[in-house]
Image (cartoon, rainbow, N blue to C red):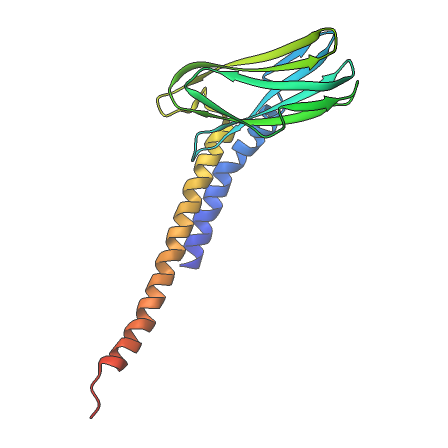
Length: 191
């Protein structure tokens, strides 16, 4: 039995490792990059969660001016919910790279725009830069084309479910054996 489990685990891991190699290449490619006289923006889509279908984004901001009041706004259509993981207003110093993250939860399939705007509030004027990505979602709310990282996540999720189910069944069998012996002793009438 142990040899069979070891053999199945080896086959599963061999099938998943090429996906990890592809993932390392695709992960660092920016979705969009914007360079203006105010900010250098690098907008990255990092991953999609296979359970919740939420999409993670990272925005790297390199200010080319000092800005004590900088507003970061995420804009999408009504079928997407954006949850920023940062403060709305941040203080930026010239040349210092700042990374902010947000999670986008889709509610409908189709083509959607995800846009982020960086606004430097100054005493005499405001300086704005923005970056945008258009994503296409299937009816299952999966980004098209499907990334190797998402495929790997789905495979690992199913493997984890199988392992947890197997362990659960094993524990239940052991508990039933012990419980039935104790119940048999308890239910046996005294002579």
